[in-house]
Length: 194
Image (cartoon, rainbow, N blue to C red; front, side):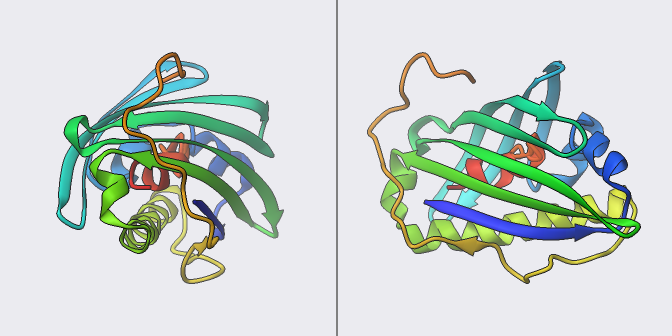
């Protein structure tokens, strides 16, 4: 599945980029976030409590940032595991552009899920992803300096089904972010719930 959106945040681009890499801000903005730790300049780990339909689980995840072009763009990749509930893994491209005194944040997420999450159904996962992404960006925008809403009210979801698997693959680097990941937080929210 794919998820994309563009959000206007009422703060300068440099401030938004810095906030997307600030564990304290991300922890406050990510719905259900119980712990968030910056492991290195390019890696974060998180524990997020989430519920998608009948599936409720605590997800452990990690994200890695790459292709960093501060304060304009980066790529975030990662994986989240929720025990018997399943897993999610994927990649997101994040770009920040100036919009007067504000910032336009655009992201494209490509994610897949496995386990019980995959059995819940694409529409339910999409709905939960949209809801939590909206909650994240509303909180993030308030924390960073504005109450600007998303350019579009809801993230755009492509009609491509997500590949699924029975178990997480071995050897992948450990997710909003988080998701920014950005996602770090941008990545944690959509990815952990996809």
